[in-house]
Image (cartoon, rainbow, N blue to C red):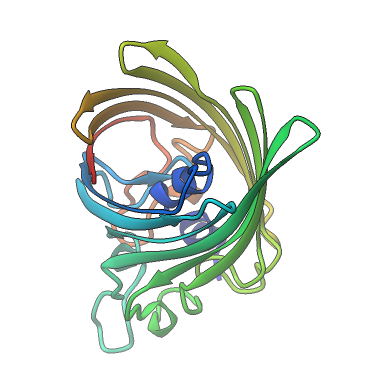
Length: 258
C-alpha cells in the first residue's frame, strides 16, 4: 500500500458529530433534530466530497444526567474517488453514518466529556479495491475532552483500523478549539488539530476559523476558512483524480435544528 493511499483514507470522517459531542448538557432530557447543507464537507481539514456540496442531518438525545447519544449522516465522495474494484468499477460508499454516545460531567472547575464514535460507511466496497490494499472503511474511536472557560481540548484514539488503512489501530487526533460569543447571535470558533496515523510517517496539522450566526427560529449559518500543512503535497492527492484534498478552502453552511 502506498503512502498516498494510506493518507487519503486515514484522515477522512465526520464533522457535525464532533460538534454534538462538545455541546453543553441539557437541564432536562431532550431529543433534537437537525438538517443542513454545506458547500463542501471537510473533516480534520481534508475534503470528503471532492469540493462539492453535501447534504447532512442528524438526531441527538441529551439526558439531564449527562448522558447523550446520537446519529448523524452525510453524503460523501472520498470512497468512490479512492480506487477501482477487480470488476473495473469505482469503489462504493456514498453515505457516512456516525453513531455516538457519551457522558458529560464537571469536576474541579472543568467540564469533561468522554464517549465512543462509530463511523459507518454504508455498504462500502473499499476492501474490494484492486488499486489500494485497503480494508473496510468502518472505524471505531473513543474520545475524551476537557473544557475550561471558552477553551476545549479533545483527544481521539482509534481502536480499529482508521478508515480502511491497514495496521493503523491506535491512530490519534488532538483538537484544540475555543468558542467566543460576539453578541447579536454571532460566535467565533478558532480551531487547531493534529492527526497522527500509526505506521504512516506523514502526519499533518489543520487549522480553521469559523464564524457562526444564529438566524433565529432554529436556523443557523456558518462560514469557515480552512487550511492544512498538507496542501500541495502529492500524498494528499486523491488516488483516481489527483484532487488535492488538503488545499485551502472556504466552506459555507446552513443548518436547521428542531
